[in-house]
Image 1 (tube, each protein chain N blue to C red):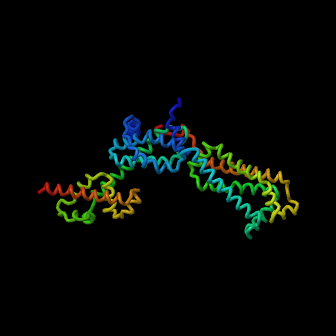
Image 2 (spheres, rainbow over the protein chains, first blue to last red):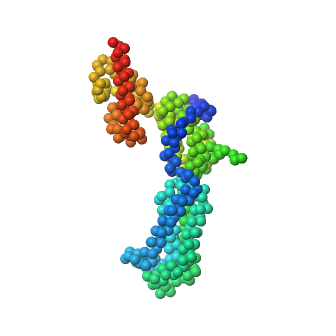
Image 3 (cartoon, rainbow over the protein chains, first blue to last red):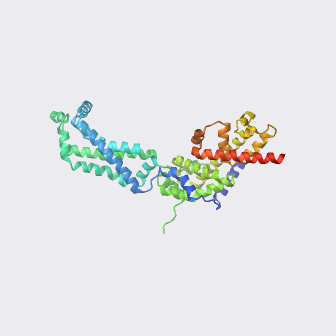
Amino acid sequence: MREDDNSIAKDYAIFVEDETLPMTPIEATAAKDRIRKDLVRSPGQMALIYFGLSVVGYIASLAVCAQNAFGLSAIAHAVSYHIHQLPDPWCPILCGSVFTGIPFVLSLMFLNRFQHRYLIFRMWWFFASVPVFATGLMMILPSKFQHARMSGPMADAVARGDVMSNGAWMALWAASAILLPYILEGIVYLVVRPRRYIAARSNRID
Amino acid sequence: MSQEPSDEDLLEGWLVGDSSAFEEFFRRHSSRVVAYAVKKGIQREEALEIVQDVFLKLHANIDHYEVGRRALPWFFTLVHHTCLDRLKRGGKLGARIERATERELDALPAPLNKVDDEGFAPDLTSALSRLPTDQQKILAMRLFEEMSFQEISQRTGRSEVSLRKVYSRALQNIREWMGVRKGDSR
């Protein structure tokens, strides 16, 4: 056992000594290519990918919201009806969550774990600003909300008197739209965060 | 003046997806891996494959790197085991060639199968052992494991065209070497 340890220690000494055999650039490129494509070359590249996914996600969210709001199909009508049977604070919370939930799902589907880590650890400011920006953009179009709330099945809820003021409704909607991706990305952080080394539990050569 | 990042910083950077950290770690240590593999008795061509294996394994297992742990010993463990695996596989292949039966040898294409029985197997074994490792492996997979070029390509990750070239070069080498030996014995 001790002999094995000595042998590995000797091999390690051989490994770290200065003698090396350099690879040609072509050999090195061939070895690196498969790894490179998983990694992020620059913050600009990552920003572009995440922004693109977010735009697609928000458009998909709006399509879902519009489907339900206007009851464009029998299913959408039924879903919308049930959503608006919920006590009022839950409706804006649910709608806000749908709005930012789909971009998150897309980013989960199309970003690998390295890209996700890069987003969280190196570009948290960008990731944090996208939902605020997107939600802000929606807030400057209040008439659309007004229309959506007061038409189709939502009008039933208004007629029941189960309504909040527009300001309160939109504040709740915005809060849930912004908080949901933060919460979900926080969960992703717990999964992908690097582990810390605890020397005491190790009996390895380092 | 900015300080050069440590190996630990680079692994941490690689872990969070930073391509430049990976590039720098590769630049610092790939030639070290080649040198170590060659010192272990592996041919340079195969050592280059080991570099690829090692870095791909590291990439797949980088989640297990614990921040704060010394990077080089951790990396060395991976390099060492990859070299040992490669040497073991080479040993198994050698044994397989040694155990080659007459029936398997008959499967060799002409003109190898036309050689007299007397002295055939030792000649062939000796000729096989003189081949570079990659030619030995491909020949063994093709003749003894009876794999198609497509299957070999899937296993090795090399294109079928390149495999066919290596295979035909191997057969040509064997023919030449065995021809020389037969000539010597006359």
